[in-house]
Length: 431
Image (cartoon, rainbow, N blue to C red; front, side, top):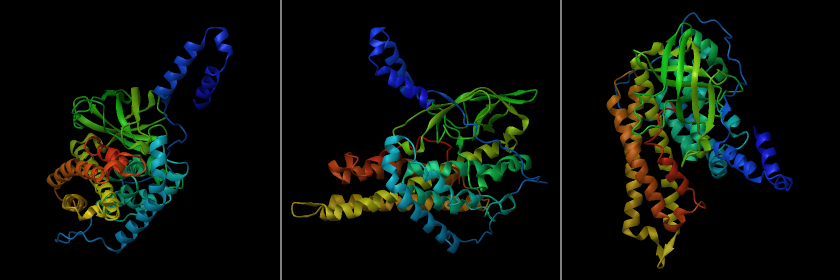
């Protein structure tokens, strides 16, 4: 594909095509190819096969109920967050501007991120992972720490673990044996949870993508939007309306016939290399249905995904706060730091207040989720706060920097664009 586009570009610059009257058609072809990104077939670099036989699905244990509302991280969580925070500061933050411009993570960055073992935390030891208990709070803290470096790259890093987490929580023994081992090796596959569709007022519980039964399994038709790392993903979990059942989740390998990918750059999250997932008469085996197509499984996926976006919003919000505080203290106007102005000081204080509220609500919801308690109310509150206050924090960050907030020299303009995604996106991440 790349060689083809390069050849066309070289041809368009040749003087020979003027002599035969082909400059216009060739330039139009180059323009169309560049704009559309050449819709490509899915990546087919891996063959998922069972490496072990499981007598039953492996699940993570539910942690003990301590009966107290205490979200103080334990020693293991502190160590994990410290490690991830260092990685975000040293690897993600410096690479963020380049990734935003080039619509892709720098070469080797995601491989280094995989070495952190983010996905291993949510995979039981019997499947080759490092998890012993369900750890929604730990996952929230990890997402927050990564987003402090960059939101787009954080989504790119976390996308595969959304798939492995779903397989551990709801996959049957065959699905786990086929797919989970790949997420514990040295070469973690790119994978994505694809729920979003480009429709007005999209409701994840009413997907336009359709799934119908066939003698051999299922057939999927539809288009998913803003799928992270879509062009390189090898495995997708796709939502579709299953005839007579409602919304359900299906495992789709990118090598399946009828799966094509189209680039879909967006206002924000550009480092996540988002794309469209086209499904045209994609035939799936009966074993591709995740969680038995149960309604409560689908609801749980949507809620845990929204909690993931809330945690990401908290991480970016903390990045904004950490950036504007030294800025307003060092920036002078009329002979004094602008932080001496009451309006500036109050704006910074508002960021800190709203951020703390968002973090507490998100972590409370995560704590209830991992203990198996009802958390629908808390998840809804976290979603609402992340959408409204996250956007407010991003806007305040730009305003506090004045003209500097509008230029790419400072990262707040990128954080502002990224934070607008919080209220729009569904899926992609999963706690």
